[in-house]
Image (cartoon, helix red, strand yellow):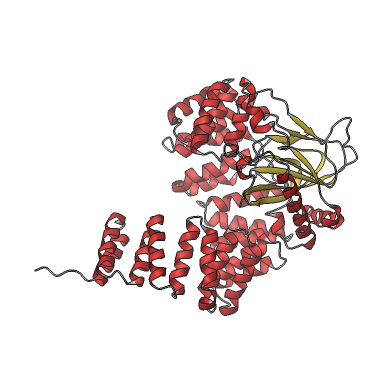
Length: 562
């Protein structure tokens, strides 16, 4: 008779199969082992870890659930399960699981570090900072926690962010992400020259890393480099790192488009397509940029070659059809796209334009219902406007015109505005949240088919927040915010040149982007008023008219389902 392999031997064979890259062979060996030892929690935990490393998320979650049920007092198993839940996007469940073993795991550095990472993923930066501090109190040289706490300091605008990155580098000096983080912290703290020097060193040392090249470009542009020069280093990086050239081309073209040099972005995309003719990401970029600059024959050929079977390809093809004056064909593509991705803000925004061109009555359902576009005054007693304006001016004095945003002729604050610690901004956020609830109360009834109203009665969160200060002749180009369901503009300070007669500086809602050539005027002109919040569906394109003098200071955010 042949001997039956022991669970321990089967486990070793499974791990060996995983190491060889034989994911299909590892799982059955683990299953045999667990069948022979069904009560072994450590074995289930090991099998779950293997599944997670192999990208088998559903299997990993089921096995971690099994391990924690077999041994609910193992903090290690619960922490591992929480990591897997976080990777699956179930952050709230992961944090609930960790909270239940806090007493058991309170002296474990890994517990607090993992918890902090999940709290950051949930956008609760205050809780994440506290958890990282708990981890560092237990182990002051814990590298992951030093890095995480430095990142939180940068995101919350803490003055000691550069020092925290320096401390983390003292433990892990070869980590390029720490060096980039330190560059960003120095830049935010006013040491722009030092930040540029670090970014250049990292970009030169790691030419194939797009994030390093991107930061170098951002800092160069902020320092005044021209639109033709700020991203020139990408060409050198591609020559030095040809195996990463495709990713670098994508980043390079995106940077050029981000400063409205769509002609140069298209040229880079053409070069990329010639060098990488079988990379669908490159071909999609080349099609989109060619269409954007009016090279319609090239765009049509690339789209025909790519097909229209992916959500991204359908969006590019639909936008191209609108430019060609074929709104009916665009609408058909967008209908297919939204069947697959019903939450696609860009898909709904483009479909709105197609519906307007063909006279489809569904546009009235999408954007014409009373209450969807709203003007909400903030309660004066709920916000210290003068204090908030002073804080915002200080931030703008150290900010630049960003890459990849709609701002033209002004500055935009870094990061998430409401993640910062200034009490004036925290107070302003609370006033905005109260205004959001007043807006929700007057919305039309919930509608499961509507991109905004399907979330009417569900919890909301602020998904992004920033401030813009426009100078004379500044404006926002026509754009949408694809990361939210509800967009906004809170007017903090207005120039005297904005009035009801000439409508300079007014918010235009519903107009088509000029590059589409659709000749669709804005459906709503919104008069700015200090202390007033404009709210409208994120599926509406919007921009602003330029004004002749003074400064226009706004706060904006996106609301999204919680």
